[in-house]
Length: 334
Image 1: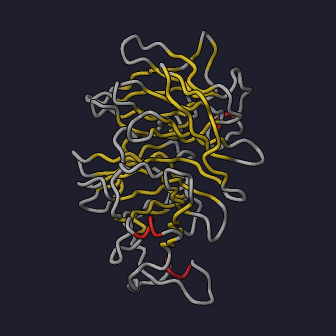
Image 2: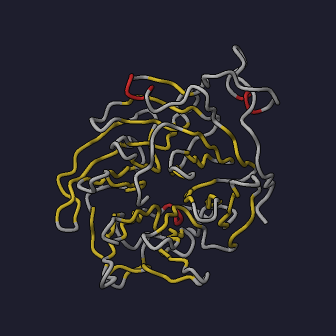
């Protein structure tokens, strides 16, 4: 079993004036609304925040959490703990955590397809898999033109059923998140055709593609690039199953994005790392302006929208999972 799984823990102590942010999570005390760790940088973000909702730490005690995917039909959040090689499930009703599958191929990004099946990027097995409704696991992608993938990282599904995933070798860089091995292919974003199952290169001009999401009209694809050095997020136009005309959407240096999701209004919500004052979520308007931050005491790797109205933001952040109700709704498909 993954170490130290404790179930639900509330984010229930205010930030100390002089002692940094950690005290908020260490004491049992109510949070004074509005939550001081929700930072409005532009009036557009203020309309998305609720003055009487606070960031909650809903589970902790993991090694490195990733890949949140919400199941409204079961009222639970599925997420990965990559080093512990586990897929975990947090119940929204009871606040408890259970192991769904272990070993699980060192899972990273997860999402659901348009039939409600789980898609998982497995760093250890270096495959993209689908968990069928009966629990069996189908391998959707393991090789490209006969050569083994470097390790799928994140995945989204378009309304036409096509599956788009990044392959960036995160699991072969060492033995903590997977198994150390040489890369046999360049790092890319691939598209799986829903009819034939054929795989084509969607993005081939990035150094290390990572998180990705579609705009609400699916005319644009946002992709995070996380090579050594400067890390940026780009936007592409979608033409005939390919992402073209790539241009920089934002540069968060010295911080950087990881997993990303769009809301129904086209704002981009980015899991963000950058140290105190940046770790958490950074929110960008469709024009690329940074409009707000949700600050966490840990670097945030990924996020998704869930809850009955798709207005609860779930954030997988290093050793913990957090949640926040917002006045925005997640875009379907990611």
